[in-house]
Image (cartoon, rainbow, N blue to C red; front, top):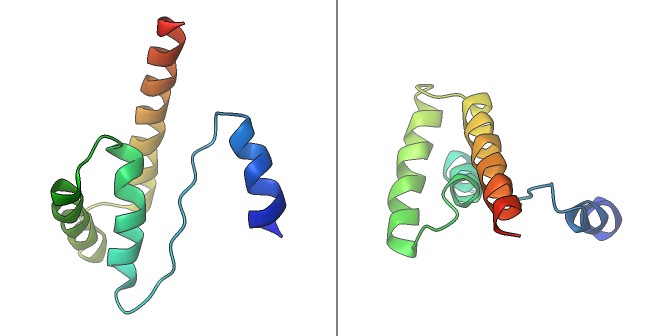
Length: 88
């Protein structure tokens, strides 16, 4: 229900970011893999793998928190939005 109705409507608002993942054998890796492109959107596949491993390790070892990652994503999103507004 959420994927079919709510998410598409929020996506049209242009001020929401979404990611989806399914925890599997390595849930921290799966979560990191879903989050990294949100705060490094211009990342290539090689960098994605390296950053995913770093974030996975930080989450597992509790050297960073999910709230800090979300803060970083929100900051990047604000910067992107401001850059977009300046360009139009």
